[in-house]
Image (tube, rainbow, N blue to C red; front, side, top):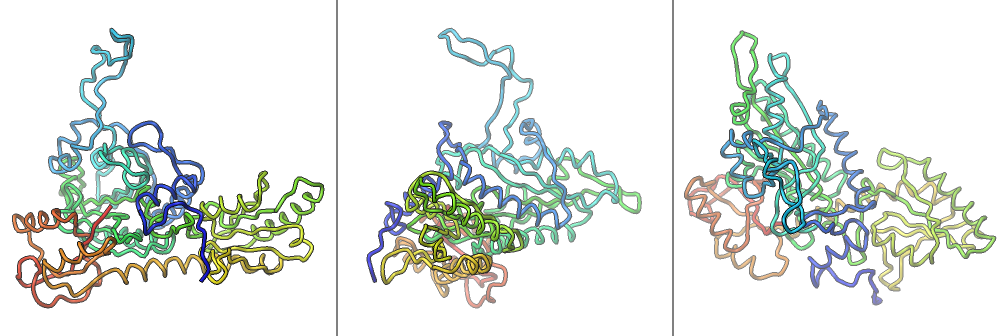
Length: 513
């Protein structure tokens, strides 16, 4: 096997955190903004988020939801109505107290004491309370139900330790909120949206997630049940990629979301909420990236194919560009993964090799180089981002199909690549989940014996109250958390690893972002 010189300076195995930051910079996805905890999302990074938005929005609307928009500022009194909810977010809330600035004694600007708000406004950390107010106005009768709303917005949660895409003070997300006539329908909808997220994460992002219920201590503040999809990153850590919550009547009680039933009586609505955010972009990086940069599933790549003519600033360049434009037009007319192929003809000045490595780092699924000799022979040089290297030679693994064959086969390559990335992620996840751990000592040994240990699946008795608090403290001491109770896990047999009591379910434990 020949020595391969990779496009990044940091390797995943050496420093995964530094590698992650280098991928974001090298792929020109985002950069620091100068405001603590906030980032500038650059066009390539935004293009990925736009693709994710488009695909998920279609899935959400297919389940009967309408998009709406609600205010960024929420009166503090809204949160005070729901004590458990506000307790979960109080330490992260950004609060507006004044509406005007004036010149201070030292010449700088200070809040005008005369412009103090009568009631502080919280910068949206989540929208249950403000949307609850709207639902209380819009729902009057059983005929108004179910009410299914979705919002694409930004939120602010004042984070102490930030990392781009994964944990920022301001981030972008989608949050859905629904109101239902009864518990059964609301619980069913909670599961419907969990499955929407699972399908989106697997089929579009190729993450290979595990869906399941969160334990009591990990529930969304004020929720009766919280369900999640968990993705395994290449360093073995877990990323909570999305959550779906059954809220019971807790928020309906606080906001007065009631309806007149068919018999003329009055009932509280059962509500749900669910959301995913730009942290899924971070999940894509850490699931699929390699030592050459980002690798994008074709479904979310802003450009699926990039054509690079090897221009020499000579008159013959015109013929080469025309040759490449013919290929671009052919590919743009093809369909892959249910949509027209997104293809870019990159004619910007620069050496072809340098431009190639720029697109490699950005994760463009297919890169096609065309030089004068290629044009003369009627061929192209095609590179698959998921099969970048010829390990025997240590050189890029170019294929050289004819122009016509490339135009016909690239859609199939994109479909194959999408499936291959999911297979890789799912196989890596399964290979790094250790089962059969029977004691707490084994848990501790497992997570102290490896730099990137993965997850373990263990059995527990589903304790509550003080017994659960003791388990959480044990886990916290080793920076561990319960990820979820996987749907479809094997039946339990034997005792709980924490208490020795009869086990009732299996849980996944791991370190997490």
